[in-house]
Image (cartoon, rainbow, N blue to C red; front, side):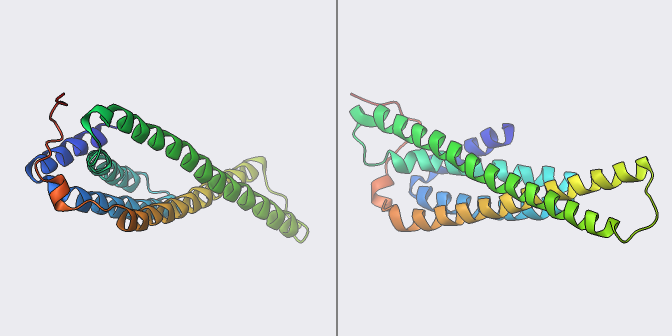
Length: 196
């Protein structure tokens, strides 16, 4: 959260100096977010907490760099007296999109976790038919814990892959749908108060 706020301030200062870079900054931020989702997918598969933390900072950078340009671009051709309504629509869109995205990613991740646990249990049951040696309670608990960790890593890895795909789809939509020219953004001060 703190990283997102810090990178939002960086994006704001960059846009204050050159407002025409908004569309390019948004595109770069979406690229960064897609790259971090792919990196997190590899982290989940390898159980590396330290690298997960550093990649989490990349997430914060991507989010921070995307919020300010997104607001600027979405409010570019809106009249001052309609800026409040347009801003609230942007916020509603972000909240609904976040809720739907979380629902989709959660479904993908936990479905993969459940499938992994079921397949591991079936493989263990098939292997148990051919084994004559019984495991101790401690060994069985260790194997169950390892299976659970593997299932979680598999599920979240799949979730991150889908997340990267969603972000790349967002990049394509951004490149096709946003038609803001440099002239539209010149002279805009994102920190200026509305004048009426």
